Every structure is written in C-alpha cells, then in structure tokens.
Amino acid sequence: MPHVDVTEGIPGIVSLMDRYPDTARPLNELAQALLRADGGLTHAERELVATYVSSLNRCVFCTQSHAATARHLLDDAVVVGQVIAKGAGAPVSRKLKALLVVAAKVQQGGRGVSDADVAAARAEGASDRDLHDTVLIAAAFCMYNRYVDGLATWAPDDPAVYDRIGRRLATEGYPRGEPALAFA
Image (tube, rainbow, N blue to C red):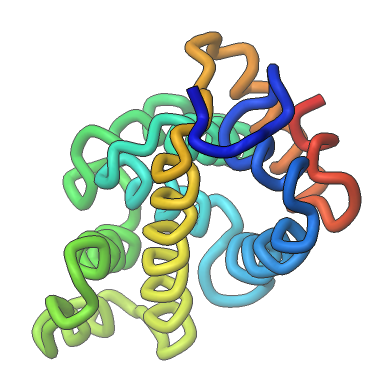
C-alpha cells in the first residue's frame, strides 16, 4: 500500500507523477536530458546505466522499466540481463564496463569514485561528457529509486506491462505532458 495518495492501478513513479504533476514535469525533463541526450553515450548505454543502478538499489519498477527500454533500443534481452546480473562483467564495450564501475561507486556514495576509476574509464575512451553523464545518471537514479520505493509504490509482476512502458520510452522518450500516458 503506497504511503501517499496515488491513482490506483498505475505503477511506480508513473503513479506519483500522475498524482503530483508539479514535480512530474521537472523529473521527466531531467530523465529526458539524461537518457535521451545526443552525443557521447548512446541512448541504450544511458538506459543500461539507469537499469544497473536501479538493480543495485533493488528498485523493481525502475529496474524493469529501464531494462525494457534498453531491450527495445538494443533489441538484445541477453545483454540487458547480463548488465543486471554482472554489471561490468556483462558483454558490453570496454568503455561501458568502466563506466558501470563508476556508476556502481556512485550508487554507494559519490566519494567512492577514485582517480583510478576515472583513469580506467578514460583509458577505454570515456570523455569528460561520458563521465559527467554516467555520474549524473547514477546519482539521479538513486533519487528516482528512493522516490519510488520510499513512497511504497506498486510494481507489477507482469513483464508485458514493462514491455509497453519500455517500448514507449524507447520510441518517444520521457513524457512532458500527462505522466500517466507513459503507462498506457
């Protein structure tokens, strides 16, 4: 049972955004800026960072929603599952492996990112923008995950729900209008 009044039948952050549109708009704009930016990391790589951090935080709704989005962008469920299960041990580029290490350190606390972590990412081709975006995605998803779970929102167990959300986010990005539309 959610800790605050939300629209029944709408899961996760979408229910909070539906009920609290004044905070929905800036949260969606941040997600759009972080996950749909052009240049540097691909949209799929950005979604994989969000998925991985959400899985480390054990936020079911966010993990499954962003995993579904990454699956639609990559058309590769195996890689997405491996990122969730193995993080930097997943079959992704060496650059993304190094950035997933950075993301995991941010998930634990920002001060955990070391000069050696940054040097390792740079050695694999990570730019300042890649490092910036990885750290900001990881930090933002810690916030999003805590928002979703801290208010005890509902996470469906039907993979088809997440597939619909993922397809929509992969094709349309993060909604700036009516938040509940992301769930439809």
